[in-house]
Image (tube, rainbow, N blue to C red; front, side, top):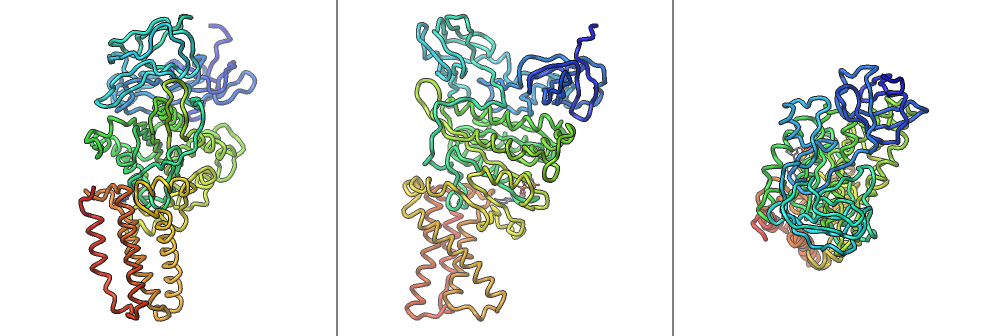
Length: 560
Ligand SMILES: Nc1ncnc2c1ncn2[C@@H]1O[C@H](COP(=O)(O)OP(=O)(O)OP(=O)(O)O)[C@@H](O)[C@H]1O
Ligand SMILES: [Mg+2]
């Protein structure tokens, strides 16, 4: 045994100090006799600090460490759809098969099943020049789901061979003239954004099917939104409703460090979900990445990077991908825990000073882009990140850091949730920077005067708030007839337009047309009332009940 073998000198939670070891930042290593996977996160002289992705109990000082010469990568290829992975890409099912319900230390399982055979149809031929992002051919991964096999981003050359046929992900399907083999899958380092040809602006919305978002606080395709909300305000229901109903070709859902039983819910509910548009299981177009709070923090920290890398991979095939994160706060807490163990100078509330920076870099990976390679195609990754501020206090560092990079904020309000007004979106503090750019699309696909409708409804709610404040100060007698009408009409807007029951058979999803129709009808009700008042009728003579009933029937009825 040579003195030069890197050995564990100290274990602190999921962190270990190893010397003598000189490695690259984020380089992977096999830690200890059980060869647990870890990654180098700090280098000081020949002392390296590693974060271990597994439970480190039992790891002892003196055990050897072996660096692997590569950073954490995602294995990308056919078989991803429908899979359930942990934060470092191990499929839960196959790990459990190999080691039982409790994952054994050092358990290794490739993301993609090595024995699955796929029928590959080549669309390029030997003799052609290919480069990163070129589509080599296709696989029908699931019924109706075409998986495009790509030349890895940084690879290029003359195609020497390429064959159609049945392959596993480890069988070469061809090779370049320089001998580089080509496979159905390739690996990509999760902390590096996959390159694109050009970033594009977006005039297309990420259509959520939720009225309060599409009408009031829309997100552009390739944009991002944060959903901060206190305990039980409906964050998870929103993320899941979008996973089911939003217009996306592919959904990547990262359950990051929420309570174990909540993840169990996700694992049992997701496979049962049916895509209303195709009638097929949602899992046919989804990848789940789950980390519960009892899994090691390092894996939790890594899981959002795995999620975005998988999302980018499907984007690169030309898809519109939605990445859901529930919740970003648990990721930030993992970052905080590791920073504390590294004894770094803490910033606000113990979070590292680079929290905002990391969060910004992560959200930067959303976007709509012109993609590398031929045929020419575009794709998008939209990120929807839930945030769980302790005590529902939005002034805390994670919400504040996310606010700086978010294009939209759907702020959830505990009081609305308490009144069972769901989605409990506070229309006063929420915002969207995309409203103007997606308005033409909504006008074309939802209905005329989309922006005017939005503005008038928001003004109505604003006015209602002012009037209620006045009424609570000086009593309702101070209000005039028009004020009473505004209050009534606003109540109807909240009830019929903004509320949406995630479990309703007909209203869980609202098309842009339906959203427009309901909003326009609610506003018409106000205008009719105003006309009656101008004609001299007192407010007491105006009966809004039948109109309100009609609107509710319209909301809950079977509409296209
Ligand atoms: N759109 C909705 N329609 C109907 N019910 C809803 C809706 N949104 C939330 N709820 C109700 O609120 C409950 C709590 O929602 P949810 O679990 O999504 O909250 P959360 O913010 O994720 O909570 P936590 O902070 O514990 O993660 C749900 O179980 C459901 O009963
Ligand atoms: Mg939740």
